[in-house]
Amino acid sequence: MMELGQLRALRELSERGSIAAAARALHVTPSSISQQLSALARRAGTPLTFRDGRRTALTPAGLALARAAVGVEVAMERAESAVGSFRHDARAQVRVAAFHSAGLALFRRLAAEFVHDGGPQLMLGDADVAQQDFPSLVADYDLVLAHRLPNSPPWPDSVAVVPLAFEPLDIALARSHPLAAKQTLVPADLRGVEWVAVRQGFPLQGAIELIQTLAGEEAVVRHRINEFFVAASLVEGGGLAALVPRYTVARQLFPALVLRPLAAPVLGRRIDILARPEALERGGVAQVVAALRTIMAAVIAETEPHPRR
Image (tube, rainbow, N blue to C red; front, side, top):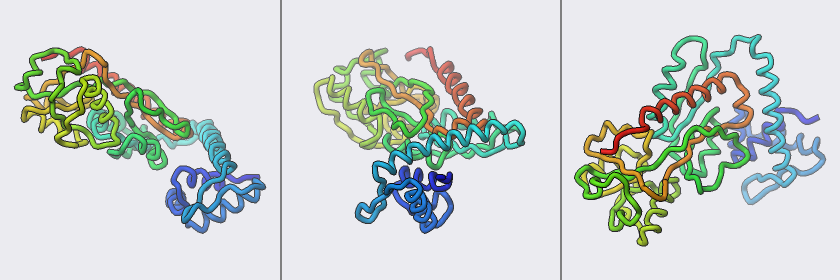
């Protein structure tokens, strides 16, 4: 019979890419991981791994079994939850990571939700990563707040996805900028504009490229800055533009800044909660997901509708 520890070793190798990383995740030695994998291969009756240069990779059979291990973990969490009401474990830790602007908009309110006894203990972290790197964070966090553009590749099947919001992207300009007099913009208005853009590989870069494609010219990127507050301070100085998310940036901190939507195309990003499927079976995690959805709805309600000045 295959053992749960062996399946976990295989899954961690699949998701983390090396025996050493899998060992760190499971708090065991690399030798222990290798022994677990060898025993699992004997049980399976077929090779599950092979040497690919200096690293250990999974065979097709190993990949299939690693995917099946996810279902085993989900079943175990459901079994734990079935008896959870008979244990006093409501204060279990729930680890949450978020990209910077989501953390700013949501973390303070989320922490306030669970300051009293009886709820899960939160461990919050920020994660400024490229879009393709968000799914790997679920190996170290119970919940990961991630964002992507609607036309970008979907999240991989290995992670569970809880949609949180669709956040419009607006054009940030200084109040002194000539375009600030317009209530809405079209791509042609932005010809010749110099941009403060995110670094390559981060979701919003694709939106700027779309605008400039429709405008019929290549985007002129003057600065590449991922932190919206730094970008906003540069835009306030005049002459530059940036794409800014409507809900998760505290605009009151930038009185000389205005946001103008594009009439077409409608730009925005999806904000999703990513998790390992079994994590969502835990009661404390479910409480945090529910709180995040409520808080996000409140943030949107406070922002929409808002006057365009």
